[in-house]
Every structure is written in C-alpha cells, then in structure tokens.
Length: 236
Image (cartoon, rainbow, N blue to C red; front, side, top):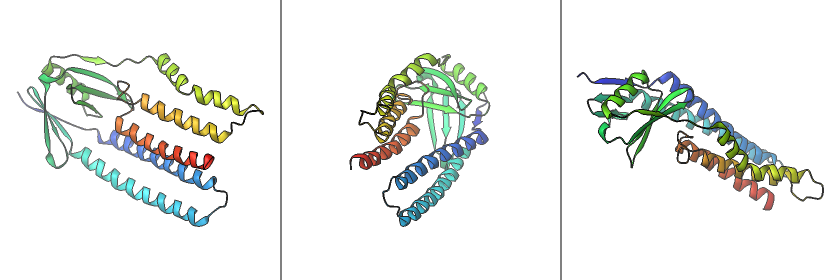
C-alpha cells in the first residue's frame, strides 16, 4: 500500500499567526500605555522607552513569525500502514502507533477542522491540514476507531462565564453607590482576575477543544503582569 503524505495549509496558518501577534502586540501596548497614563507626573523618557520596547516587540514577533512559518512549511504527516509519521523541523521524525490510540475527537478552530489524538500520557492535536477529510478517514481506518464530534452547550458556557464574572458585576454596582469606597481602579483589578480565571477554565486542560494551553498560559502571564501593576498603582 502506498504511503500518503499530508502537508499543512500554510495560507490559513499564516493568517492565524499574524492574528496572534497582532493580539499580543495590542495587549503589550495596552499595558505599557496604561502604565504611562496612570503616572502622576508624565515622564517623556519613559514614553520613549515604551516606543523602543514596542519596536523591540515588533522585531521579535517578526523573527518568531518567520521561524514558525519555516517550521510549518517543513511539517509533514505520513501514514505508513499502522504508523503515523510526523516530520518536523530539520526532518526530525516522530512515530505514532495508530493501534495505541485511545480516542479520536474533532472540533473546529478558527473555522478549520481540528483532530485530537489521545494516546494516554500524550495528547496530540492537529489542524489546518490539507485534505484533512482524507487524513481523518485514513486515521480511522488504521486505528479502528471512530472520530467523535466534540459538542459544546453554549448555554452552559454562557452560565459559566457569568459565574466567573459575577464578582466583577457586583463590584461594578458597588462603584455606582456614593457611600461605597470601591473605585473604578478596584473594578479593573477584579475584572482582570475574572478574565484570568476565565482563560484558565477555557483552556484545553479544562475544556475539550478549548484554548490551546500554550496560548492560554501566555495570555495569563500578560494579564498577571497587568494585575501586579494594578495592585502597585492602587495600593502601592
């Protein structure tokens, strides 16, 4: 039987990578300019440092973008009988025995089908693969498993979001009461904490097909830095 080779959809991945770095750059810009806005005395040397940092971020993001696209272009999937061979950067190969797969699930990410392969100790997920329907069919036939569609209840997700943001909602109403000493700055701190908890609960560690763990950790780290700065500004 002839081995089948699959490649990644580079155009779709390029859009995703660019979008990711735009979001990261925007978040970093927000934190830096927010810190400048909260300064009691405007320091233009600090403002110049902000622009230098943003220029550095752009340079680093561009380098990472080029490196990621290079990795994606070198990534190949080869199905050889009962073995899935994954070729990465510098032709490094990793074999996955399809007979050892415990479960197969799929959903969509950014409008593209995403396949989850559960090997027990290791969980793999792939998306933006060209001809992914053929890829999925071959994986099913070789593993003897059927792919389960991940179904989510939007109402339950909405309820969870409301529960997580309940402290922020309560804090907002307290800021509207004249007798209350709760300020808008405290509200921002609570909302930031709520968002950190939301990202954690929506990560793939907590939710099937959730936000990729690495992306969730990066967002939480950025929000963590913002939280520390907020505490220093309000209580420092």
